[in-house]
Amino acid sequence: MRWFIFLLLALGATVRAEIVSKAVEYKEGSTTLEGWWVHDDSIHGKQPSVLVVHQWKGLTDYEKKRAEMLAKLGYNVFAVDIYGKGIRPGDPKAAAAEAGKYKSDRPLLRARVNAGLDQLKKFSQTDPKKIAAIGYCFGGTTALELARSGADIAGIVSFHGAVGPAASGKPIKAKILALHGADDPFVPPDEVKAFEDEMRKANADWQLVAYGNSVHSFTDWNAGNDNSKGAAYNEKADKRSWEAMKDFFAEIFH
Image (cartoon, rainbow, N blue to C red):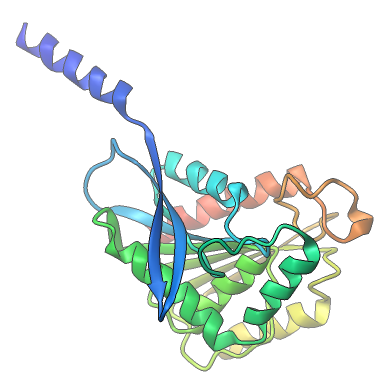
């Protein structure tokens, strides 16, 4: 009878398990930032953890959904805020202007993403030896800048991010996975070649995967499907790149 009671309790715990999400304020210097923390409350103890960096419109429902997808895989996830609390440019012109501030000031960009990493490390669920960062578009660029800042984490995944300019300055400790649209007009071959040369010079552990018939934003289901616009969703590339990320995590978190 006792074993039956234990079974019922265990089943009850499973039913109650859920993905928990909450906004978290933190600071970079005097700037207040607001990220999004997502984890499975049925998992106890230290967990492999993932930092998610947003695209050029700031932290939106898209990144929150990706964070939830990662949490369902068993990761402790923090979607970082680069721009600052409440700064979420809604149109392309405003987004380009906001992103441009950070692309032209790489030290500030690195400071903002490292502030997010510091916050992720503060969560009791975070295993400090098993941390990765991923990013989309602007976020992919930012994730690479995190690696270039010398961050001591396990791995970096860039989804259709600009991969240049090469300006490391510090040893690259993280393993790198760059997932690239082969026909991306915003990340031309010369930039990709410069990235490859940078990685070789840095003696980094790196991979570059190019998806055919794919342009910029190939993972963004809000981007439409017209490749002629230079940015468009590609279901095959989206699914293949997600699987590539999962295999990468299995390697670096083993």
